[in-house]
Length: 370
Picture 1 (tube, rainbow, N blue to C red):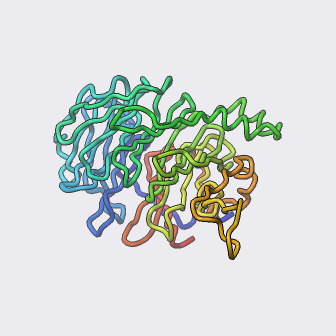
Picture 2: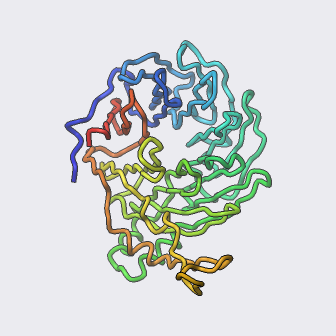
């Protein structure tokens, strides 16, 4: 196990309360980092950890999610209570706009489309709402989750596909044109199948049901990860027509996995960073995981042993997917504190992980030193 604590950089002075969420602006020399915490505190940082600005939002509700617009003028969106506030990150004297009441209940997560014209939010009622930007008009409300909706993420390169995850143990891929799920995965059903022959894992799962906490999509758009309360991170591959092709799992944490985010700055799209209640942060190369790798073609063969044109590849047994994950994490970090949020970042050319925990300090782990 590689201990990166000695390499960590601590960013202080931005908050007086526990940091709950972190995000970065699009990569570039002028890129910024934003963090938000309990009691409505928002801080914006330079890439070397200097505080650029601070703001206390009115009402002092906890800030639950932050997201930078991917397009100019680079506004910052912050959820607190049932409101989303728009900020100018370089001038934090006050909010630019406040979309009051856009959440039916407390908002838990925000996600912006690649064009920056659409904002999705997940709230405690289980609803997912889609807002048009600018203006913040609610144009769609998606209702299928039967418990708190904890996370949302747009699928890259597919602007009409949105992922959601919730404490009903469901992960869903929505088709926004028709406002309905294209598919849904019940993590409890999947976990029970995986644990049929493992009494110890089954015992653990009974006490730690796979509540879905955080969903992320790789930059290619075809692989999805979801961190769950049973310590597993589910992996799902999406194929043509947005169909679910395969799924499997990483036993990533000894306690609940709270965060899973693909890292888009490394050698391929399938590097995955996870964080959990066990105080561990890990980096995984899932590029060779059977869920990600295209299955070998079998069946009838033509000349030279190649599969004949037009033949379908065989489906892969999900039990094999679980059993073949033996490589483990490439980087393990003994962070020590329960992870509230994890954010991959490119800071002055260095690939890093920003970690928010129960404290008012941001921890930065430079992966290039690993």
